[in-house]
Length: 340
Image (tube, rainbow, N blue to C red; front, side, top):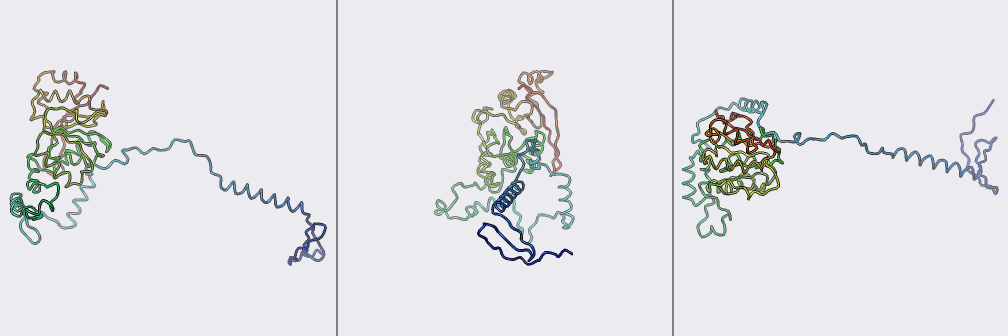
């Protein structure tokens, strides 16, 4: 009968013959020489080294093509979706809202622009500074009272909110991105331009405008009021369809004129188009003209098509765009540059 080895581990003893000895049981003794011990330790070290190497190994980077995110996937939503409109309707319904008469009531003091303007004149501006203190206390960029009551919002005969409608139509029809470049002929007080300036990256919105009052409203009221001064739009005063001040070395993705060519001589319109063709991105760039193209139709017959072709422009069709805010739509005519 074989007895199981003793579970008690006796201490090591060192002998003059360089042997290590330990006793597993009184009847048995195992002797390990120094070379054997060194080889065992070395083997264990090598094993641990390869084990750690395998655990820390990382495969080389994959050269497989990666999925690139297109700019369109990060593009901001422009026009309201059906879900957006339904949400607004539901919020009005949930809150039990009904349009009330705009009359004096607690906390509300409706005043016409004329009444507001009179208050500003009578009380020397909203800050009520006395004349002798105004020089050192007033802002370095005073805003005229007429602009503070937003009289310029009524200068163009349509609700100011229509600017958003125009922006949505043009931005989506021309498929622009925030990096696109846009030129407006006659941006006025920025009824439309504000939305482009906000959407585009800095310095990518340009405008040619002749009316000084509109320009003052744009610079002194609209841009500061909407926090858009840092967007640095390039707005130039001029009425001769000269575009040298806008720089060179780039093409516009969108050029548009909202009811502006109606007020210009046909000859000047054609001069402007000729100068603009070379600044429009070939094929993908678009020119949009609103309301009508009498400058073209008055030529009669096929003369308009021939002149457009000679300029390198192609007529792409007529569009209408409905307003989200009021019962209104605009007619737009689209052109593109077909020559590279």
